[in-house]
Length: 128
Image (cartoon, rainbow, N blue to C red; front, side, top):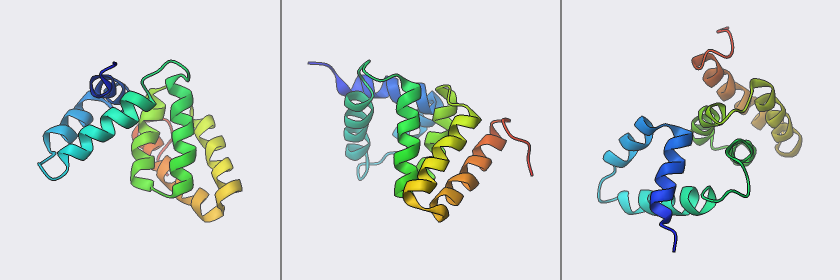
């Protein structure tokens, strides 16, 4: 059987960055560490660990779903990862349009605010 945790660590680091993932794992105490390990195995190892969907498409799906849920801290983290996986500024805008259509204008505006912050930090959008 595939080692989902090891695959999860590989996938998680590839998208979110080795430094970020290492820091999260190192800062995990006995209270949250079992969750971090299970989430890494399940989400990143099982969910991202096959070749059925490429990383860019998975990142785009994540932005749409996390945006729909309104989990903006996670949305910013995955926006940065999506850029790393090749998602363009124009594709991010289109994803936010879909969030607005299906989840409402206020949620789209939240996504635009978060996207602007990340795109500016990544040098893909001029600071306003």
